[in-house]
Image (cartoon, rainbow, N blue to C red; front, side):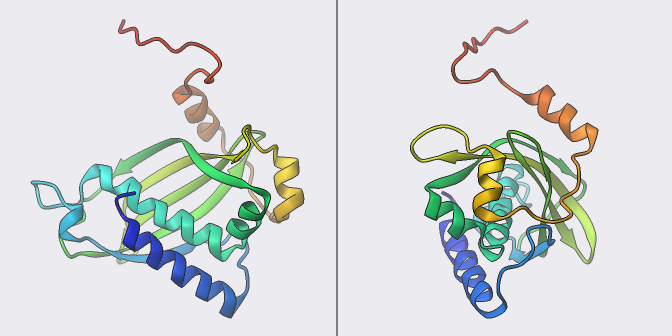
Length: 186
């Protein structure tokens, strides 16, 4: 984990807010303030494209913790993994620049939960990512959503997934781990 200290800080703050304010609705848009550090930039002196996704993890930790989902999942022996992600860049984030990371759950289907992350400066979107995450058991296998919602509660008003998100998920999917996936360049 290449943003370990920031992750620990976000978890500490999220747990403190959870104790003070109680759990938030999982549909809430959460915000984490981040500053671009020297360890985040590349030779062009802007936030490295690969670092965005590592920093966006902070938004998921914040949302899952403040909604009380992290504690419920840990109690059940479950954890979330990213199955697919895509990011679009609009403007560069420069060294020392502060930005707000907004995170929200955009829905779920029978196998995954979908989230959106946005990097914002003064309310303007600089980058946006869509994440497809699966909930897995430490003992193996995927947690069905009926079991997930029975344990953590089903969020009211969770929107239906837009068709383009399903198209993206289907188009970027690889074969399951039980099927071969040879590297063949056409």
